[in-house]
Amino acid sequence: MENLKSIIEAIIFASDVPLSLKQLKEIINEPNKPFTKNGDQTKISEQDIKNAIDELNREYTERGSAFRIIEIAEGYQFATLPEFARWVGKLFKERTKKKLSQPALETLAIIAYKQPISKPEIEAIRGVNVDHIIKTLLEKKLITIVGRADTLGRPLLYGTTKEFLKYFGLKSLSELPKPTEIEEIMQEDDEKINSYIEVTEDEREKIPKKNGK
Amino acid sequence: MKYKVKLPYFEGPLDLLLFFIKRDELNIYDIPIAKITKDFLEYIQLMQMLDLEIASEFIVMASTLMQIKAKMLLPKPNVENEEEEEDPRAELVKQLLEYKKFKELAGEFEKMEDEASKIYYRGYFKHDARDYYDENETYEFLKDVSLFDLLTAFKKAFENASEKEVHEIEVQNYKVEDEIENIINRLKIKSRFSFSEFFEEYHEKIRIIVAFLAILELARLKKIKISQQDTFGEIFIERAFEEQERYAANAI
Image (cartoon, rainbow over all chains, first blue to last red; front, side, top):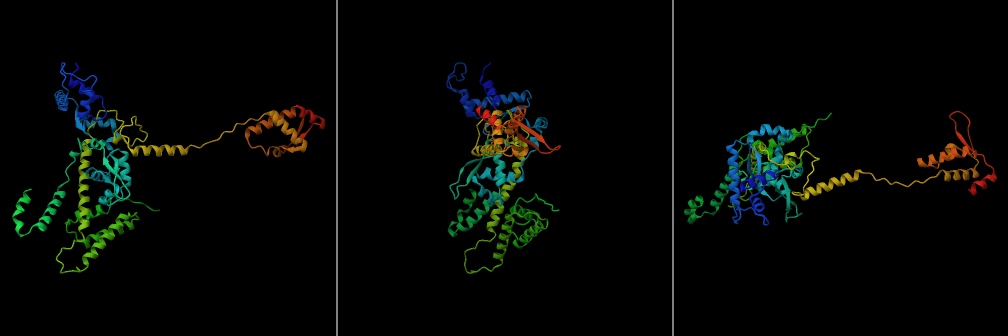
């Protein structure tokens, strides 16, 4: 009965944290007694593991299971489907109601996009003191201290955690929503201004090229 | 009676300015500075009227706005200078746009939070940010422990430690025999003591008890006489042994 798919299922099932493909690979290819397929000595690749997870999820879908192995916070973990939140939520009544405050969300957004970032830098953007919010976010483990800046006073630098990814249902930081059009508008404005400054009589032909970029 | 009211709407001066811009459909790139300064100051006055604590950030912003307004009112000193002078509002606009961007992203985050809250992960549920209200939660593993965690733990330990008072316990070793000797010696110097006078120098409960037992023992041996003049009156202890007996007591 011992096949790659079942082994992966067992490992992920037993874990209370998301496991990365790399971690799974290391477990499966463990040097002393690695998994072998019919005596085949070739090592299991991350792609093999990914395929097995996809296969498992297909099986769960076919049989109408209420859970899947989902990709979250740079790893894979078992999770219930959102449509069962109504019911599972009753198990964690308090939790579902506890949402982050607007200031906390704003501060988190700033940290997420600008990390590593110091408190004074965050305050410069928000225009208000963030002492208390930082403390709360640290307690929630949504952010962590990632180092110190080389600037005056060597302020602490903050960054987001895996818990942050999990909390917002993100696979990785690259999945963060793109800043809205404002950024684009601003960039366009900058480009307009720049082209206005740069363009001289003979350079005028180059404009279409610039815009084409 | 004073009432403290918190207006939850404006998280800071930038938030308030954005509110004015949105409400009056102002062009963020071309803010009518006179109007917005007026609105801003009115809001601060309102806060004062309501006896709200005005965060210093609001005062700073008010002064910034007035400074910009003043700059814009002043005639340009160098008209011939072709170089375009920076709009006094530029810095503020930049700040507002930056803040607006994150405010909107916060909205996105809220939606994500909402969606993600519908997903329940398999696990032991010991390590979930959504559970943090449980202060007594203990983490079994040292993984994911940050410097901050250690500091918090240290602080907690420190606070708990200071709550405990330290008592010194002395070994008390009083014997009835010693007290008997002590009483006899005292009665040699002064033949009569009142009860309260006698116990004046005794501070420890256990010693008073031992001394009392000694008095009872001496009374039984008829070495002392205990008398009371009236009901609830002072009790006196009196010597009832002769000089020779003193030597006998000393000989013990």
